[in-house]
Length: 65
Image (cartoon, rainbow, N blue to C red; front, side, top):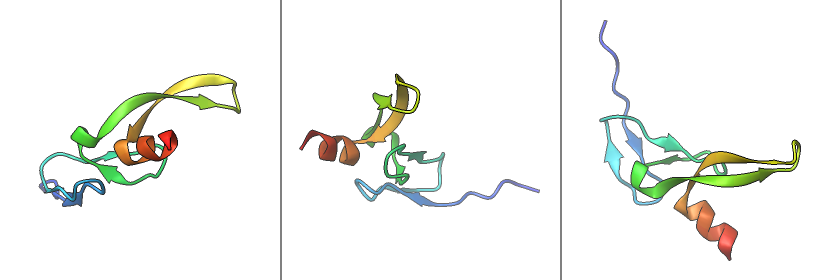
């Protein structure tokens, strides 16, 4: 049996694709294309350390306002 290719849409630019996979933002949990997501250092108050997480540009922009 072949692998099913599910379409996905980037919530930032509405890019649609069935090739590859979208990446999930660690803040809003929405799918994003690789061009609109970056690895960012985020403080985790539960453990008192910074963690590297994928965060979309929309959430980064809201954080900077």
